[in-house]
Image (cartoon, rainbow, N blue to C red; front, side, top):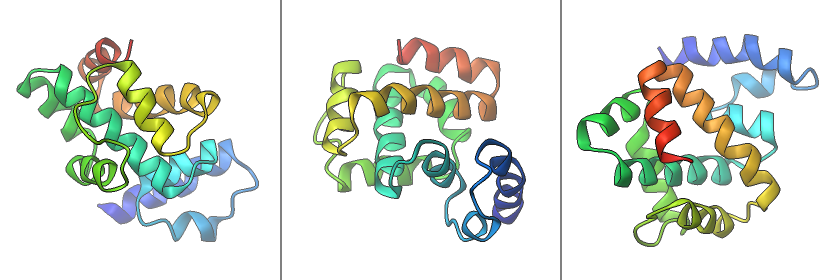
Amino acid sequence: MTRRIVLLIALLVPLATPAQSLDSLLSMKDPFTGLMQSQLGVTENQAAGGIGSMLILAQEKLIKGDFDMVAQAVPGANKYMAQAKSLGAVTGPVKDMKGLQAAFGRLAMSPEMQSKFMPAVTNYIGKAGGPTVQKLLAGVFK
């Protein structure tokens, strides 16, 4: 399953980033963070911590069943949330968009990068989870 995802990304990402080599795409351990790295130029820790921070805010804002649908669309969702905490991005409840921006700041993401990162992650998760998940996320990250 993971190999299929990596191969799919290896086929799709070069269309968006022609300079990206196939070898570097195939060496990625995590397709989601790898995609964010190649599309946005963030580090692996920024990608993983940022995704985790967004998932933590979604978990805080959504009822359990709704968050479970979001988490199912993100393989390793718990891993991302744990990484956000271990990297120091999330040090307590995120609560709102201001708290999410602070978490991104602790990952050394500029406001400009944040404005690109949030929609990229939301779109990825929304596409993976379908229209219901997309709508749930739109309510959290507004």
